[in-house]
Length: 507
Image 1 (tube, rainbow, N blue to C red):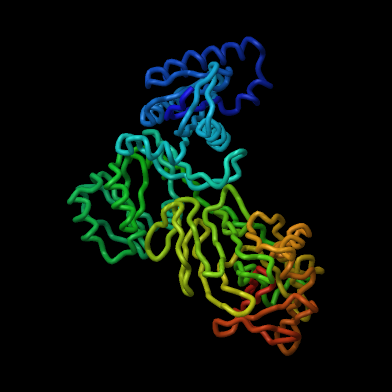
Image 2: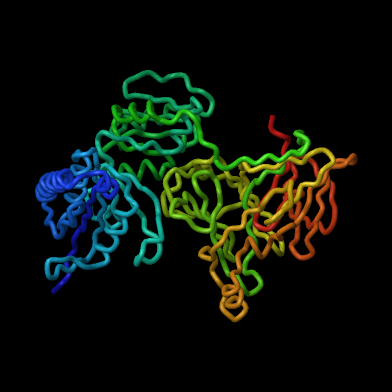
């Protein structure tokens, strides 16, 4: 039987399993009946053919990707008994229908996407986005995700935006909380702008000369500080606006107002703060301040590697929730946007776009700015600098250790387990390292690597490991510390893949 291009739609009731445990049989029968009575007609109204009904979930096929997404938007507006909501996921590709079932990569992908889709949302694949009428569907990128069972590589995902909802991008949230967000409605006079203003234009027709004239009248601002609120956007206007470096909020003014009023008024801590002061006094704090990037190829073992950044600023080997990925190869350091909202050189980085980093570049993400410093020597390529909340105090007359397993008081270096971020060299040496559990963090950092000591003469950095080197950043270069060096506030220490900064004590 020949395959045909179809959009595969999966739906299910969010939190259904938990509801089963709290309901009697009569309630469950009522829920399943209501679910079927509402979902089946909605699918069929938009041209869908139901292939499977498993009680709490459906699989349907659509000839039109646009109709499939429109059906998804209708489905998430439904309200089920017990307060349960639907979630909908879809993918487009070749599908073979046989014996009342459907098969193909699009079927597998749609099923996997459903597992990541939050309740009350419609997510879809890149192929669906390309096939649908983008001027008819309000949509926005979700980001790139990997780790789907049976699906190699990473998948770029998108979501349809219902009329009653706006999902605030991180830069808009940050501007709101810092009182820098300025809403400018069509037809209203220009308001006074605070320092670092982020402008959100509302009520303008995308691509119109009126919109262009307003943007031209704005004071000198970074393009990334200018955003537009719009719902249905023709592709040529969407991509033209984003290519100019501006930001886009998908929705209408009413939904935007609700989203802004319900935005969390305080930022959550990016990580655990650890202060250890034996005497209750700290003369200096050691702060985890970034990621050090070893040079490749490395000892016939590592030919290239990546690290993923989470929204809270932490760097991990690999994560489905990452907002950015840095890659180090023999050609240099590049950064790829995995989710919307990253700013680079005054413009928004589209999801999936990679840029080659140069010394002095700044990338602004959900956790704030990250500065790239090129410190290339025979061991390292560069540093990605951004202070975290992980810090340890150096008490008067005391020694504070730095290492993977330091004694107390001590600052523990990150020990990221797993090898999924490493691209291996060919040959027996790399094979032995891989089998032996080699990671960059464990290879370059010791359990007890160095010490920051306070004495009457001031602060000193002392190397205590016989093989793992400790470095200081001086005049943009890495200087090896074989034994003891004096250090002052602002100094940057490199131990393994971690940058540690000396900062004035908090409070």
